[in-house]
Image: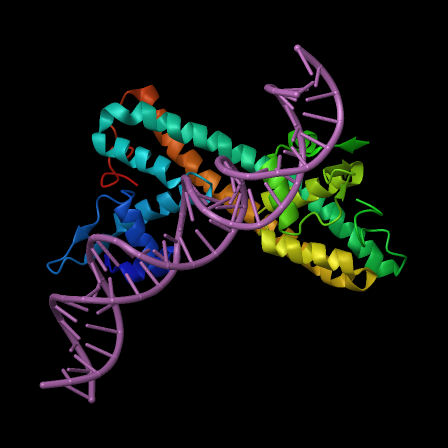
Length: 134
Length: 134
DNA sequence: ATACACATTAGAGTTCACTCTAAGTCAATA
DNA sequence: TATTGACTTAGAGTGAACTCTAATGTGTAT
């Protein structure tokens, strides 16, 4: 199957601007063109875009994704370097999730505080301003 | 206990620039000053800064934290609005964690692919460039 | 034929969250 | 007394990641 940039944008929930920007930055070096110079996305390309999105969504900077893509283009002799990049990113993502979970605990405590307040109609012991509590 | 901006920066792992910026943006409206106009952070302030960091780290924009802080300053009649803000943020954070976990699954698949490659010394079936696989 | 809808490019502009600079004040120390 | 070092401010600068504009081209519908 082949898709226009607009269709792909819709599919992966990016704008056409962003897709062009990603190509310009070297994140999508394989996209073909038709006879008018318009981009043609194949199914493989969609999957690639999705991988790029996955890395971006988990906090990998554009420049680092570019490095990874460049290694991909070199060929077999770079698999170990690529493995290393993905491994390190995996660890960062795991840490990020752990930190988010910790933060969520704090947020839930805060929320519980407000819930108690609302339910019990008590005096505001839960931070009308933070001088009083938390 | 009282602390200088430098000490607080160290404690919460922000720069002094960032702390001043947060105050300028209205995120820390209660910080007192000494006779020379220097900021004095109390223990309460540290906790407040940590809450701000918690919200920031989980993706709440500065402007939204500001709105929340402003509501705190108004007083008791805004607890329901504040509860709502925290509740909605909690849900967003949960979604964010869920999305991160999904992404991690994808990243792990990729990594496994490279690991197999490295261990088995097979032909590169795992994306020397993405035309071949994934 | 002409308008509409979609595509293209280079490059400018925007937003966010800092990050830093310059110029100044103040207190303690050599 | 002079320097050092920590603080202050307003406001300029930075970097990342988009986001958009303007000019242009192409194919289809009325």
